[in-house]
Length: 345
Image (cartoon, rainbow, N blue to C red; front, side, top):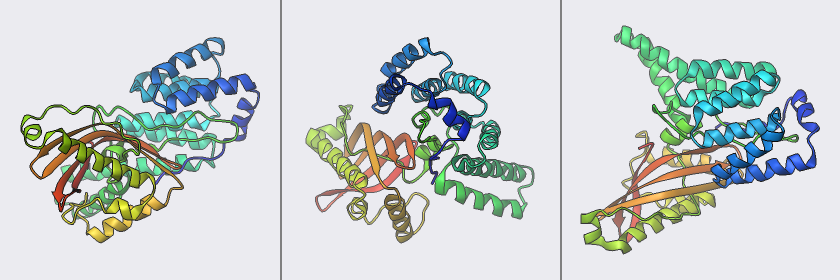
């Protein structure tokens, strides 16, 4: 849904143009550590980098992203807020502040940050789209409040239903205490990327919450009845199914991906199966590339049904989200097929 900005404001280019090759190389290496999930090492390296360059805008921005990935929202907010004070002409720190505020349900603060981002860079398309997401959430809250005060208000009921349809098709507010927020690398001279405002909420609520092509199953906890009846081999078979499902998703093989869903699959929003499949096909084929990860999967089996819970992350050329997911599978004709999927559970 949300696209990444592909250009910086002219003033931002001026700020970063003077960076030496050594500085750029250092930040690129730190960025690689961040993207590979080595957050502690990335934080140590960026602190070393900033020790000699305490005012470096790109380094500070990158530190804010690292802290965000470490679920240290308060520290990340402090870093990005100070960055907006020292470099008020840069739009990206305001946008990332909005991501953090939205993940905490502080949509009014998110709105203010996005409007400031747009004021600094009127052509910043990502901020406009993110602002639309925030306005949608604020509108939904307002209609809900109106119905609390007047439950017979049919106009408000209709509007609230429309807003909920809009929100559920893209993003929803994060649950209290939501931790991780999708984010992108620090601004670079040639291009800048910015995270979707409600990316974490999308990971927890959207039907397309993501998985991995490179699954490394964690040791599953013992479920006495299931393990006694089906054994370790049954658990491995279920996890192999999830792995193959993830690989089909990453390969953008829509036919293979949809084949993992059984005929009794319960669509997330109760829509007709053909409509759901058409929407999934659009979401899978639209990005140029998709990378799907499944982390720490845990499976339990009871006769011909299984439940697999895991941490998932999804990255494409336009979006990065992460969150938890649970799949319910049933065994049919020798195959495990998905009967239901839930995000944020």
